[in-house]
Length: 596
Image: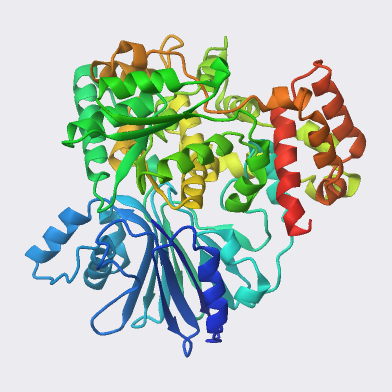
């Protein structure tokens, strides 16, 4: 795990070393152990790395440079199958000078060019400067576990693991960007800004499963992996369960490769319990597990986590945290660089702080809900009478509406007239959702809904959470469920293996129950969150009102009477606007330090 950064200037203009130093320092939390920069000022290119040392502590310094000085590589993340790839390279006569996974990337690229990326099993954002081609490659992992942002003004491209490293004009030498109203428009639909948009015009996310090639005269983008290439097929449960457990077991095993202490987040839910149970198979010492609980039993899962820890003989650390974490929200948004309406970022930061006192790596259960239909929203939507009879267009729009924060009509009512006019022709469904539905049209409808969330919710929000909150305290989060083999198996599996008679994760729970026990496999799911809606009605209502009404950005965008109506109806209990108010508060809190 690291932070990467750099620039590519098509006119060969050099950035000063002080600017690169500023980019590096802005990512110090992602890589406090080491730093390296490859700068070719005469070519107008640099790639840099801030390193959190996890593998080959002494030999893993980045950038890695080829023996002839023609190729330089940095990466953020880990290549989990680097051991097998290194062994294969040695059989071909390649001499490896270190035990680093980044050297494996260099040697594979030397031999195979950019096509090597399909061999990687990992989470990564990679930058490769190739002097032979006079080109810079930027590569992102299959599903977007690791972030990678780019700003391009037509002549200069700046890139980094976090927006804060490329935003200041003083660092990039580029014009300061303006807030992107279209991105806010989509934010109000999704509760997060979906990739490739960001809150800033001209700054975009490299899409998951793609690489970019920056040359002097052009930029090429290629998608190198596509989950939609899978085709559903009939499975016998016994054979499916055997493959499921074997793939997840191996995905967990290779994610235990580290030269530093590691552990796991453990909530006692089916996902984290399954991962911890598999971890325990591969080690000869207790797995270190971490959990935070709350005094309010509605939000406290610590008893379930303790049950799972006892079952697997873990060295378990649990703390009861203060439930009201609103004072942590500005810190969270600083690390996110963008507004997010998801309140669970705050407790995720808290459990990350707990784990960071003991380990540098944690395994998590992220991805299981999106792959195998673990959220209540799936059962609620597909359990409605008549859903199966809807035609495709109506089904897709209705599912999108069911997950939307503000409807198109509600957004129009909220906007100032000039803003409404500017955004009148932009439909978030058409722009951000419909293309993914069309790509997944050959899947059954349950898998179409899951595919949409894999492409938007994961990269836009749910994977941002463990990355940014972990990196805020310099720990690495690894996600076995998002091993490419598990993702492909999930989308070869029909929807009725996931949702069945109202039951979520149907075959998955049945397969995992012998490992984790029926009590953990079939207990009611709790969301890892806090009762922010209750605070907005009571103890934090005045704070919320002041936050919304004092925001210059919100005043510029939204009608004050409509905001007041949302506040009043939520407080008096005539409506529940928790999600809407949470998103608006996050936008206001994000905007304040940016002068918006």
